[in-house]
Image (cartoon, rainbow, N blue to C red; front, side, top):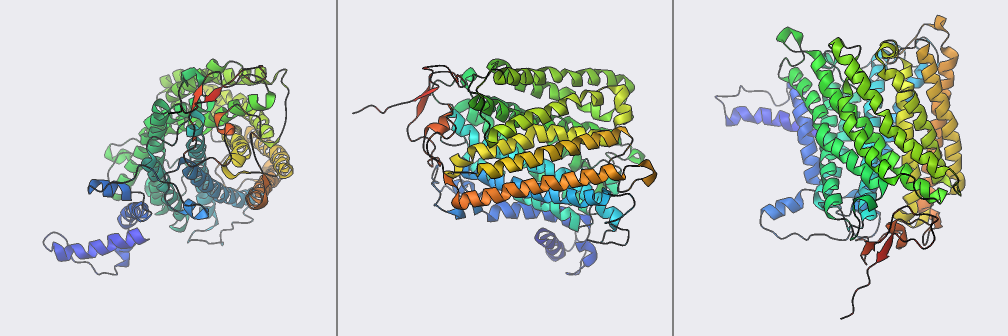
Amino acid sequence: MGGALFVTLMRWLLPIALPTVFSPMPLFDTQFFFREPAWLFGGLMGVLCFVWYHGVMDDWYQWARGIDTPEHHEDKPGIEKYFGPSLDHKVIGIQYTVTALALLVIGGTFALIFRTELAASRLQFLTLEFRLFEQNGLQLYNSLMSLHGMIMIVSILLGVAAMMNYLVPLLIGAHDMAFPRLNAFSFWVAPPAAILLVSALILGGFDTGWTGYPPLSAKAPLGIDMFFLGVFTAGWSSILGSLNLIATTLRMRAKGMTAFRMPIFVWASIATSLIALTATQLIGLSFQLVAFQRVLHMGFFDPDKGGNPVLFQHLFWFYSHPAVYVFILPGLGIVSELLPVFARKPLFGYKWIAMSSLAIALVGFVVWAHHMFTSGMNEYLRVPFMYSTLLVAIPTGVKFFSWVATIWGGKIDTPTPMLFVLGAIVVFLLGGITGPPNATVSVDLHLHDTYYVVGHFHDTLFGGFVFPFFAALYFWFPKATGKRMNETLGKIHFWLMTPAFLTLSFGMMRIGLLGMRRRIADYDPALGFDNMHLVLTISGFLIALSILIFFYNLVISIKRGEPATGNLWNSRSPEWQVVSPMPAHNYDVPFEVVGEPYDYGLAGSKYIEFITPKKK
């Protein structure tokens, strides 16, 4: 709103400064204030003012003025350091984590609201008379459903950034990221992006789904502009963070850490960053073009002006399918990272797993059009994209075979992190098995836009990201805080969430096979879907309850959790060989890599040796 007020004020002042160019306008012209240009450009000004106010550009500004700025500084102890800019990658990683969890709650709440409406046929909860933010029940349902999708996607992107920011420098022995100031800037553009996304609900919402397809998005209410701008801003964070991580990994590895001695999570992070760095521009461009069509009346996707709405889908999916691998590759890296720790066996096929992450990233760029089999694109393109999509199963299968071989014959221990790792394997396997039918043209023509696709997609994201994310939180929480989370509450979280989610995803796919369309607020009671939808709604609330238990566990563990000293999980990873929490600059004594990272159970094997300073 501040940005819109600023643009309105400038529009009022310009006729005074340039009377021959601009016509006079009353200061309180509400008609102008509620026009799209004021909100769109005002939102952009709001983002720039936000990052300037929070001080993440101060060092650059001082450097431009010729003032010397310190290379790095230590944050003051206490919780205050998390509310302002920091150059410590660990603090930034925690900031990303908290923001991701906050968006997870918001997006999940939106899902519970519209899932409650679907619990029975006919409009029960969001009635036509029910109005909120100047929207009736059906409009509000569409807005909540659309925002749920994109808010959860941005939440996952921030969760991915959280894991990579916190872990990669620790795993490679670096004292920080290559560009600490850029790292801080990458995070601080994310909160205004989240605010813009949520503000779309207040400004009329939108009814396009999370994809924002024109012509619907070209005619949607004002909220779609905030949606476009929020995603565009979040893209900055993703691109700059990826650039930083690639530079860090290439230039700051510890002595002796050759490519095939790097932890698997680092390989997964590199593959993820290559996708985000090279493809994120496409979703930003597609949304920017629709915004230009709305505000400047251009015709990029308007057939009456020579445009083509299918072009938007090509631009959108060229990023948005590789983005699925941005979501899941770090999660699969977490699975490969933790599995040998709790199986007490070497990771089977280490080099194959490392290369499979790069292969998934590469093949992911040539599969986008399987989302468009029903779009009316040229039919001769369907078969090549069908085969390229099915090809992704090969490098993904490499990971599964490796995980099974690692588990086989291992001395398995099952604390909470391992439970979530095993849950991730099972759920992601279901997502992988249910994917090929969508890639097959003849089947997809019937399954497209049904709840089968919704169930498959949730299996993929929960198995590829949500379960591994919780595994990582439980595993590295002691390293970040010096305390461990309550094991009993952690296992209740797992055993409540897992069966509830499996019921939800299987139910979605079953009801989709029976003909239930997605993105609709009501359905015919004669179809007999009421009981199944009620079960799905109860499952959704049970998942929400399990996550509430996680948050309770998180809070009480921070306040009075059991102290975690030493190598809590008996891990070979370098960060567990030093005190918890980590020192400000990570490793006061540098180390050298002298062995393989996952030689668990092999007598006398070492991964790292700390370099003893020579006496003068």
